[in-house]
Image 1: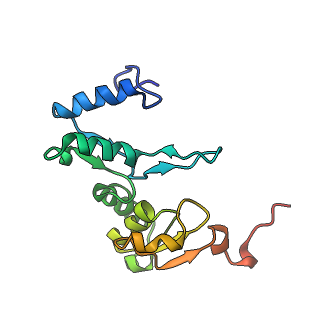
Image 2: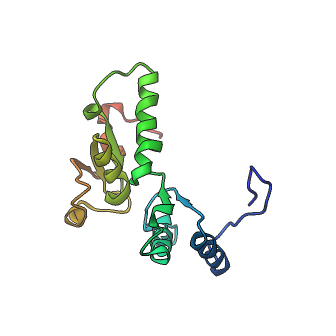
Length: 167
């Protein structure tokens, strides 16, 4: 992997060496920007892959009791994520002529801790789809991320008369 700005070789995987070097940089004042706080990512072999949230937690522990403010989550569910993702998306809707209230916007996702939390923090409506990581039964564990609606899948949100039959 190559850094598009500097042309320097980067890392394609989180090896122990990468974690050690990242720890060194963070402990000497560097900042870490993460895409989201997903604890794990799904895989094709049903063995969960470490997600960016696992690394954020590890590096926060390294920086405790001070320095945790140098870890920035700029994707869904993170404090900065609302600015960079949800608010940006709402701005794009406004540029296209939408002038409605954010309570008329619905964010759909398969995780309470990222997707649904992002909607809650942004003041938009939320829908959990159970075809991914989380099931509605987990809601009590995510009190700060209430799902207003629950659906079996994204496909089930489409009215039957509007579904395209690929056969």
